[in-house]
Image (cartoon, rainbow, N blue to C red; front, side):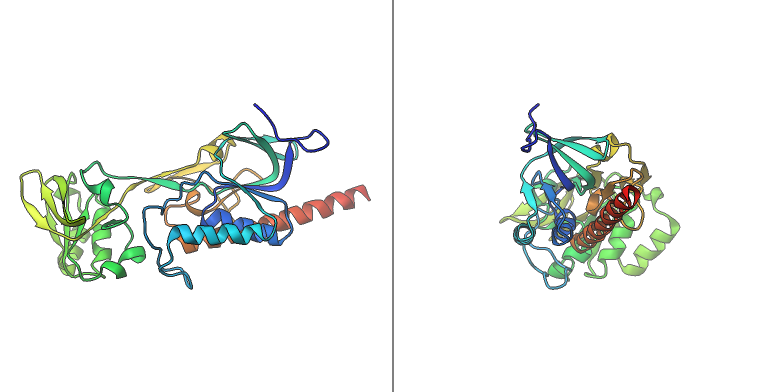
Length: 320
């Protein structure tokens, strides 16, 4: 393993290393850079929203392509001296005075505080056609995409009984909604689900889905194992969320199980149970859309600067 060293032979040291260069990581880095903190962003280049052509619901950035949003963010942090490397952080350990982070290239850097903003990956149902249409006409979030596909024939592919809730939510954007139970038994739906689905006019179709029907590069229907085809032009799916929390586990941060994955225990600022280790964005929770992730990153960045400032002042006071 090689190390990047400074003139005095020590491994490169930063006030803060941010792992993850999405909305949360860049937002934290922007705040820290403006606070004159030496900051490094380590980004593996795997944003969750990469399949989407546009992002919606972010005030002043509604409809902006995700790649353009990130490019602008990188330009902004560079103006304040924040460094960014396109690498993967493969290990992090606690050491005296902070943390050591090892990158895939073998480079090793040190930081007083560490922000983990590594996001999550979506694990899609193993139904032919779903992965190929993901982010186009196979969607997951009505708040992100509902307006763009409004009033079209919707399908909802059940991945658990919780998909009934998804079907109810998307009925706000279309009055033609069909819930395909797929491998979920009708008996798994609660009485409240059944009542509300009927009230919303959602059609419930039992039976396993065999594949999606695609023509002229667009979704046209959903085919069941028995051969029946239901014409649909949009399909909502709730993917299984797999948070990227390996670094948090290695550092000993406490994690908690939720219906949407295992996430770190954090306070209102994003601080984990390990002093100096912060989590932001989808590494801290499932429902962190871009605007929420950016807010989380901002909050963590401001809190970290305060922690560093008072630690330095207290150290001077003790010496005096």
